[in-house]
Image 1 (cartoon, rainbow, N blue to C red):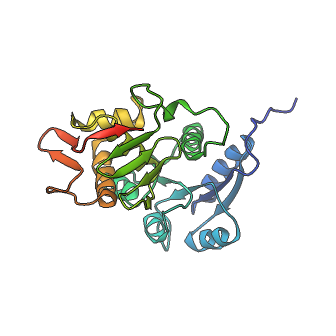
Image 2: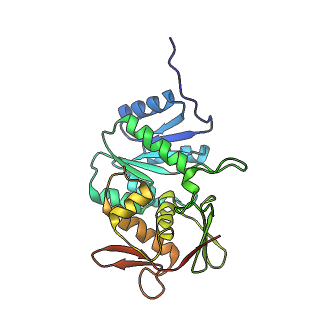
Image 3: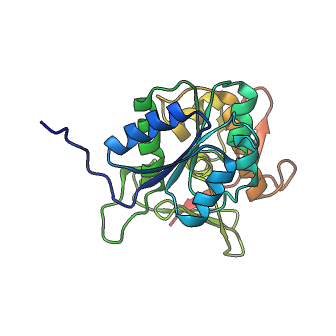
Length: 255
């Protein structure tokens, strides 16, 4: 009796980059059995060749590789509009994880990882990145916290659209946000002028079931601040409250 393969969009294309042939075979085979189209690369050079030949929806990238390592690869990539990246590392140190997230990785898993956990993370990232089709029902995540149904949040001349996930600056220029940056900014603008601890921000932005790792919030806030303007001072939109957390300073309106 043939196994039933879950239906996955035929265009869902994943690239697995790892120098270990056993891991490449394990991960690619598991993902293919769940309906994904998977290519593999053993190093950064092969990865670049494949990226020139095909468009990928997601990349699983190993950190520790001979030659150019995964963090160096990530640093060289254009993260604006590129495919989301999930990092894998046999070392799994806090420093590696912080650097990976700061460089734009969507998620980070220690090796050896359970293929089912990796699959769950991949599905989560792809689901967050999926566009909302015209005429389709709005996902629950697009509803404001107060349930008002408004999808546009305005603050200090900026506009954040919760459906399109687009951030417009005061000059109406679209500012690109990663998935993590969008979720963190949304957590702030839906709770303005309140001191939020790192644990609260993790719960609001990533869910109560996420791994609590407060330094990831510091990294995300640093990246978000660079896009919103001054990190500190009178013009800062996100203020550090010493020994407590962070506060979103401006008044927020809907509509």
